[in-house]
Image (tube, rainbow, N blue to C red; front, side, top):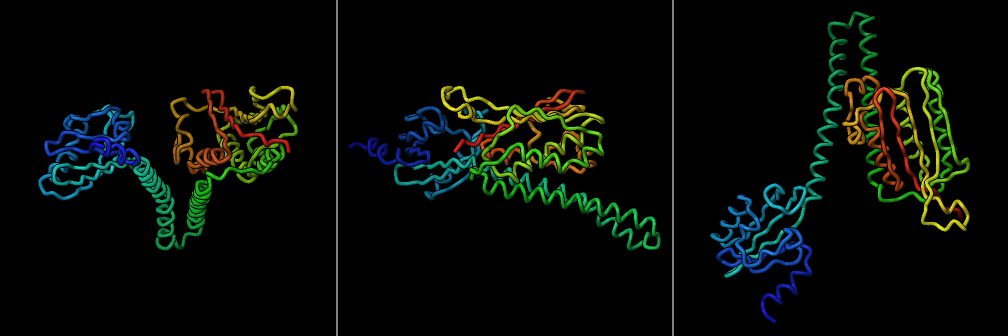
Length: 358
């Protein structure tokens, strides 16, 4: 068995991308993972034909000259190397030997992307908390100094402090909900939940708010006896977040229509019980409002994303409501689709698996 065969046998069973170069920096071997990563076999070509990043080439030169291993993190830019449509983060280790140099590359893109998401999340939370905290501290200082003898001013400032404190509480509550859902998002609910009963609970919870805003609920249900696979408390959260949004932005004396239908599974045998022909409940929540510009729709479920930040905060929004909806529906193997038309309104379409008959 020659060297190439030995290398193939050993390195092709390793998950990492492996490259072996000689003293002239010519590639002598690429395992199949490396070929898949770089979309081509560069055997017998110079290493610079494969990786052109100056940071890597400088580190390789140091390893060759000093005869010691080096490890670096490398961002492969698709604009400079035709290997992917997105950036790839690699942890690259260089191991020198007498005549050959072993280059081991671990794809750490998922880890890096998670770090970016976490950093962005922490920065956003800090930003969201800083404003109400600054307001509370500022008004407390005013009350304790210049306004301490002014009863009316003190009452006004205490009212503002209460409002900002409640805003912080709503934010913290939503953050705790997201954390809890994300921690067990991979655990799909298996209990049967009465969908109509769940919607009735949500409607009752908003009865006073609907009356206050002169908004009525119109229901169109194609099936009056429908169960889905889910967690009732979490589904209540989903419908509540969407209806609360609709109430905040709906026109006066308008309607929120709730439509319920079954998505038929056309692959099933029509000769069996009709309920086995269905596999998803489709719930549409339709409001009459000023609508949302299309350019914002794809970002509405992002954390802290707001179409109109000032208006959202004024109405008590945390920027996390639809993010929570998205994560709960992911856990339920469901989905959320949002459509909107300016000066007409928005349609929030929820898709959830129907519970099988037992």
